[in-house]
Image (cartoon, rainbow, N blue to C red; front, top):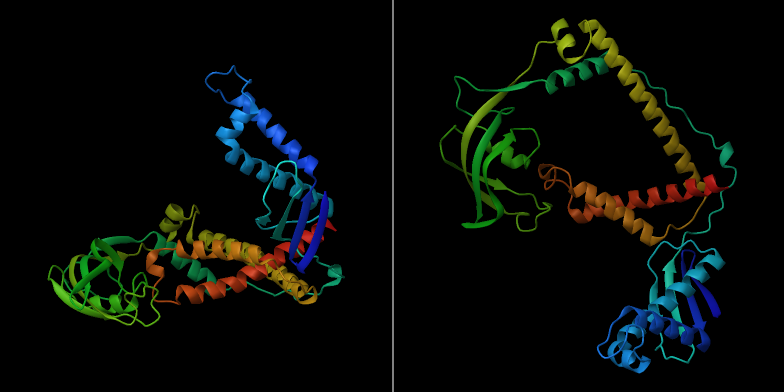
Length: 360
């Protein structure tokens, strides 16, 4: 087997392989023997069909199988012998496969780059001093209180206010024409909570419960849905129900019921301990980020584009799987992808650096 490896870039290689005629002939022979044992052909005993018959019936299919197997076996051997850490699917260009003749092909793929890490044990980092304040404890207690709030129908008022939780029906149109996704029934919305487009939430303030009303919402130019971006959308809206949040009293009973503590003082102490543990974790992550940042600065290398693209897709999928109401008014998908691509590149660099250090 003749092998030639070209370095296209630090993370890309092109392998040229030529297999001798004997290897090709052996590959065809094995394939036909296996096929002969596997198939049944009328007029012949099992495993006794002549090769000519098999070739006439399965020749093209078998040729493709032989070529795939020859490439897989030989390329795997090359990668192992040369110690190449491949990270992408090889792009294969093959000459015509002819039994009894040499067979050559080329494969282009990406590999993990060579990384030289020096003096990483002496990296200096700054430990950020963090402490839990009384205000932070108060905020944690407030969030706990919010998590146990109840929604109750509003009495003596039929006008929507900011902070209300409403159920509404809506149907949108642009220049009198409905659009996909523009209709909803029994849609639950916290007014001012950021679940929907801010302009829509502002427009429903002041609406009367049960009264069909028309509102107009101006969608921003950078809205992710190009059909709506920069357009004035008309909505027919009916508010079906208005509720408000009722918070429980924060006292010893609250501590017993929702904090598994004997008193409010014990609950505050437990929250402080939890926050301190969280800060320790933040400190550790900050130190880790500093170390990774210093390593990336001192160890310059190009991460494989395939790995960066794979990580970018992962981050994009996680972004797009968020609640639909959290999207739309922010950056466009193109802008978001660009931001996440930079983050993905750093994450890949960090992974490769840590992997290199662990294997040293």
